Length: 506
Image 1: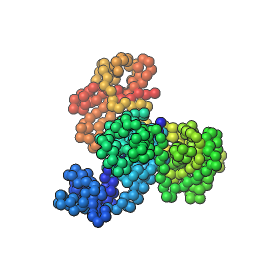
Image 2: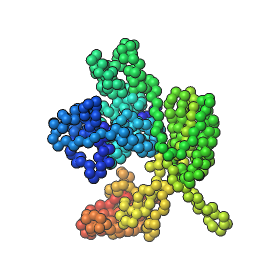
Image 3: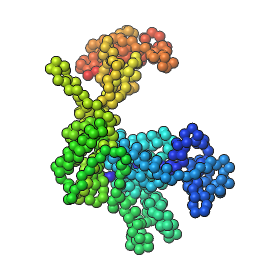
């Protein structure tokens, strides 16, 4: 099932203008409109959210808008610059999927089939897009659906900034939307309105023949594209300086063995081209142009710049099973959409020197299967508080100079937050003789401690005199736990004197 994202930028021209003006941009709270020439009159062609909220609209004469709002800020529209900036934004969106295209003057369409899990899921990928754009001052709304037409309609006419439609429900969810959501021309929408059609459901419930006879094939085509009855190909954008090779086929191919053979050939050509430029691939996109004009794609990423054709071919071939060739593949395009300078290394030739272990190949295989964000390692951070003494870093990130405490071992699993336990302690400075955690009572057979940890008063005022006493304990079953008492056991100001389980060894 295809999954398509429509990214709608309702105030793209004004947002782009504000970004270009930088510090000289007008106050965001001020109404802003862009005007252009329409015949002999100047009219509003774009407006920011403030201007729309006070009643200004696109198509209104500029003089009328100026008369209605005295403090109105007016600038000249530049559709060519808006289009060029939108193309650059489409290239930026290639980080989410290999198939990204411009969708009209105010949006992008992204084929996210098989790509969402690499970004944390469908809701997460939409949230990430919107937050990144809002971070640079661009208003965005996004919807994900089974078809391009449904995603386009829901992004523009559903009253939600982010909307994910479950699979096989797109056709039902677009029925309440107005007929303008079907990407029809204004003339057809006006004519349908005069005939009493208001919602998409009205059109879907009407016999197709009279509609085709009256409005031509365009209306039926848009309805079928929105409901998934017919295809809606997406022609992806390509960066101007991209390193790319392609293979055309006189006869369509579809067998996995044939695809794998040509993948190897394309990879060798691409690596030769990267060698001439001194680059190594960080991300490869392999696009398949099918006989029915559909485009399917697979993407791989690498932790470090790679120019090894065999290694890249193996990563690509691992994903061939996800490609549905349908009636056949007419063209294959392999592109390095991300490449960095490639630094060659001197191989160890001495029998004395120990060779350096290279696990980047394993990292690449795992990250391409589960997603780059889900593959990480922990790195020590200089902090006395255990929950602040580590952080997540990329699996292939260079090693930190910080080290783990050697005098007291740390558990392999740390609970966040620490869980309250019930204990029986004979003496205040001694570990408990037993404790109850998650309804299970455990008798302590061995214990070691305490390790006193003080709060970081220079970071938080509440930790000015905070103290924790940690113990490593082992129960009758041989399981080892890391527990602590909040406070020093005497002064109530140093902590609650309650016991918590913070980690599990082994």
